[in-house]
Image (cartoon, rainbow over all chains, first blue to last red):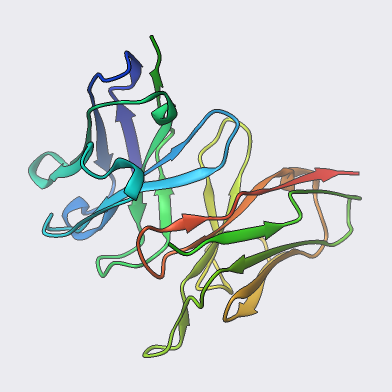
Length: 121
Length: 113
């Protein structure tokens, strides 16, 4: 059974940093692209970033470029999102998600339960 | 960026009746070299993560009831629930994965009339 479990969310002041982690199990983690998607309270879904199965390609939505970094450790079956210079508008539930194949540009077929990041003074 | 626009924002349908959700992309999400449409539909129930219902515009995922169907081409797409059940109350999103940044529609809330 595919499982994605996020951790690392919490309350952070504007301008602060936070690192989210996602522990993956139940599939060959190293074979899949992985994504982060966020959802502000009461709002819709926003794709944040994704990373190729070997880590050689990374893509970001413009609003987080230069502030967020996606990474992975295939030996630990883990996905990360390093967030810095956080703003109030980054407040959201952050979902770890698996892209459905190893060849990119595919839908997301599994999602974690999400971790809440609140940016507030 | 490709903008995805859904309509309506919400709809109320009687049990057993048809629900239709539309999604329009600001540019084509058809990749001509493989003739695939890079469009998916997701269902999100309160307090839960989204669930993939339809991929490639019309391919129903394993385990998804056949009352859910997807159609469309080019820039206009439709998710149809042929006979609404109580468990279908949710917000539905379309998403293009044709090019980054991947983008979602704003969501359509489906309720029981």
